Length: 220
Length: 119
Image (cartoon, rainbow over all chains, first blue to last red):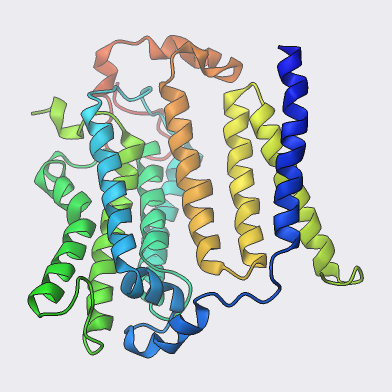
């Protein structure tokens, strides 16, 4: 055991030294693909280069990210029922704070989604804010109405992926390559996909926090 | 490399050192609850580092997902763990043994100041 420990130190030293060497020898000015992205920004439909790369130039990657999030929730649901840890009995502070914060978080999420077209922001940030609002409300003892837990929940969780696939199919049908938006429609298409993705991400994160089987399972 | 007279250099050095120190603390922490709190603190400092690297998009995502939602998910997982959750959760353990009926006791938001759900 101690021998292993003493063997670990030189290994860690080599790893640390290697990492330090690589960082110190990084080129000072590495443009990478920055100029390429900036050069085609006009055709992307948005003014924020990050959103342009995520939703247009490399839209395929983001589509797969949505699929990963979707599959993660499916995996969690397939694990079966898990009872909530305990009866949530929020104190007055958490309760009041939730009532104050939830609408503000909703507004911030909508703002981040909208502003993502020309400034830092976008679907993932907006969606995670939405998810945080959901987590806060679940913590405060709010339970979503049963009517929304069946198809509406499943449809919302799949909405991001479905919107992406619809966009991809539309471009394929129109004769272009997968997710190759025409420059005139790109802005609208990207906003449509991002809006669906925001809702899907927010609901998925909140559902991940709720955990266990699909919440409708035990009440049907 | 920025000159040593630049205050931003000291800020960056402090952030980097703080990140490594926090990472070490949270990995070496035997108490899971404290480790999660340290992880959230790490996420927030990491968001600051992303801002300094002029990547506000990544900073936003790191603060919201890395610190906020992941922290909440870890907390939820910790609360679902059996008794191994650590000393801080010890007083909650008897409550966890309450059988199924409390699963249903999750009503709508109780009024502020109320003493909890309709049990």
